[in-house]
Length: 321
Image 1 (tube, rainbow, N blue to C red):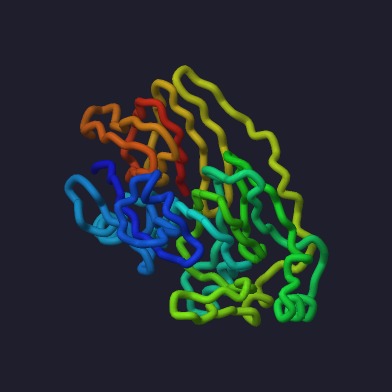
Image 2: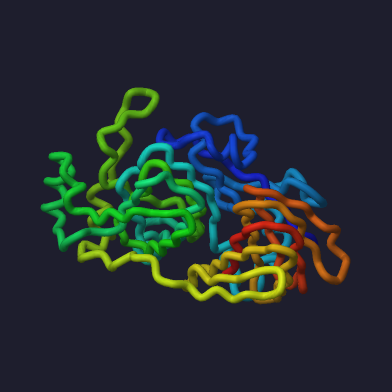
């Protein structure tokens, strides 16, 4: 059993930028490079193993060969999460994701609940999160037809370090000038509500899915997404901060100044996503050769790996189910 460093799949959606290649070392020949699917077994963008025994295999192939790497909590359902970087040079479409029940009824394996961690944001950058007031399908259809949907949407100014939990059914959109780490269900089901009448490289507007979207969206007033104080636990050499816990995943931010030790039990795999800095991770029993990492890199730690140690000066997201 060994720690797996991953190489992501890339996406060249029209709203993307170049920061993931230029600042985060993503050697992917796509322009724009809108998203990198860092830890993914989804067929639309599987990540690969970059080093070690399984180098060159997809993570999906490794987990099919070694389902025990997922842990007891994941059961037989496969890897339940998908982890991404998203570079929004321009704003994304206004969109919504279905819940599990709707998705499975219509032939998809999962719906999509997600969380966003704002890695960086330009001054004044904002995102869309739900509605400012209660709406109906008729109101929304008219607003889309007349280009006035913005007047109904809740806009939220964002800053580096903000966290947003986005349950399925929440109408949302990432604004221009934001770099995000996204943790989500293992799903690629998105219903576009509005796309600002943009055209793709072939001069065609992207497809909208209005009728499906209104079947799954919450049309009530959005809850406040004002950032609440989060408890930070300080230790010698590191700090830990719980960002999000839901039925699908748990995400912590770990800031390491010297060292951080933790356990990977039989219950769940863990994923380390390096947001900044550099370091190395190893097992404390000495069986795992220290694996160096730097900003933008992602490691998959199989369940039951035991006690592990991170040494360095780095900021990490640590994800498990």
